[in-house]
Picture 1 (cartoon, rainbow, N blue to C red):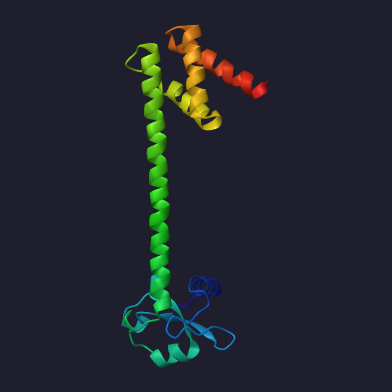
Picture 2 (picture 1 turned 180 degrees about the vertical axis):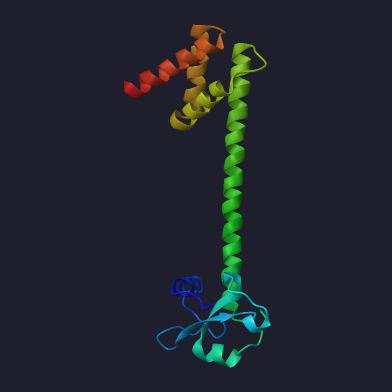
Length: 172
């Protein structure tokens, strides 16, 4: 089955409109989409089996398989860059998740210590974390400490007072 115009354009765009064998670009050449493993040899239309080729390279290659060692180093460089970017993004998300978990753990520990309890509600911890993110950790600690000082060791009353402080700050 022939590739759609959209599929062809996506391959050209991915490969930066550059022949992945010789590095040629339009308008000097006509671009084709080439099968790395030819359909006649069991290759598919999967994007990983397709690459941009100029007309001359594609017609010259015919139904041969060209090893990655011979292929354009631009293709290998692009794939390496994409892999590095994926790893960097995953690392950022992992670090952010760890930092957020640490904030939750610290807020839970603080509230347990202030209330003299071993367990507190997750909703209370989440409220403290949100205040920390919005107003800064020092401010959130100050407000929860003040709430305990005024409302005592009853978690429900402490959190009502804490939310009251936040409302007053937000609404003047």
